[in-house]
Image 1 (cartoon, rainbow, N blue to C red):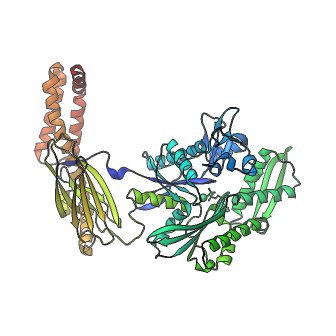
Image 2 (cartoon, protein in one colour):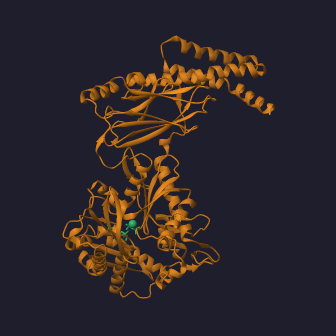
Image 3 (cartoon, rainbow, N blue to C red):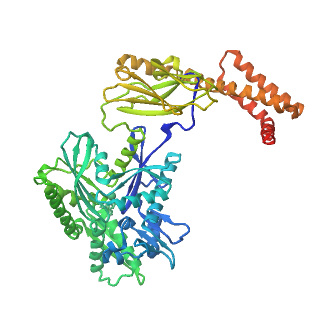
Length: 612
Ligand code: ADP
Ligand code: MG
């Protein structure tokens, strides 16, 4: 596209993050260069405990930090807020009302609140929004850009009000929710199960910190449908911790634990449990636990299993019930079993499942990251960063259009998986330009003329000032390798379409190799050409602007300023005319001209204000 330039708000800058807002842990992911990844915080941690501490209510703490605060300030530290999200107080059972170390209260509107200080009450939406804001910040730090769009996962059984509450929490955290997806569906995406043929049945066994969900999904027409869900909202890894803590307390005859002691013992029990997933035994230590006395327990994996089995069995009965409900003829009709949730790292859980289901569970993904990974994939699909996870084929060479100055602007990069879709917004670079020529290019070189021209369309538009016409250009390659180029005049809404058959994908291997090796051979020259072109565009903008300003307010400058500007401008002009395309020199000359005209620019601004 000659006579156009890139606008700063190009469409493909719009990143969407994927969030697993868990009861125990939350994670954030994104698709980067075509791959879904989970983003780590400054400490390198990818799991953020879903805990918010209001020890300082003005400055709530989230995650690990809050968890640490829980040891000493349990009453103002809210954990598992997700359990209460979007539910009326009247819905709660006694355990949900009184078990947490913080106070659960009824709000005048029938909702649920947590009392953190005498008069201060926060809602489950408030707590969730703190967690979401924290995740947003992790993503922004990791990606070095601002994000405000997200895909968020929720349990398949969440009702409308729970889903709406999740959305409100996101909005409060400054995130717009592009889509809410079910956790088991996200997990299936992460495992790449959307590549399955139709009519396949997938069981997702999700044992998290405090909840157990079993979902049966059916693949239909390339989409997953949740055909049944079952579960227990009071079953999970926390039960293992509690059982192990009781076991230890009994060993040492420790009774009537204070809430601080309970928190400490539970934290140690959890550490023991997690270690026992890989080790055969563990020494659980409670230094200076009570009255200055320390305790120690040697725990074996068998001992742990003996206290955990009752909970694992409970999940087994739920599975059987779910299969009955899904009208499956027993576990044999499940084609795939995937394990999700941190607690499925317990070897005993895996063994039991294998025994019940008769086939080995798929463990190829980290069970506590699968849901977030799936959310990231869904987000990537929505913003065009993942075209589809179906790896049919890849683009052999980059596809793009020519922009102002004869530069190649890549829209779909080389090696992108197809189908692929991406777009960018362009504006007219010259006032009253009657049309924009969109030249579709293929290749790896910086300058348009060195790439292959696949086709061309002319988009006419009504005359307007520079930057007033906007054309959105979208490239879409379908599964068959057909490239459709759509150019939309955003003012009139008029579309222009160019279809390019096969040449986008079917390229001779030798030709591809030649193009790629040339792009390497000429990398230096190409880069110089790009920098030169960009500098030249800048000069061509700068020179007439300086001239106009001089005519308008130049009289107010003193002689030395005037001389400086004239010599800086002359330098730019002579470099432009010299014909040796010295990019670095021209860039430097532009810079000097910019500096020399500081006073001039200020005068111009003043004059503009006097005019109004
Ligand atoms: P949720 O979906 O409830 O937010 P997760 O999927 O992150 O939670 O699971 C958290 C639970 O997984 C916790 O109970 C934690 O102790 C447990 N967990 C994490 N890693 C392990 C491990 N290696 N062995 C056993 N349990 C683990
Ligand atoms: Mg989870």
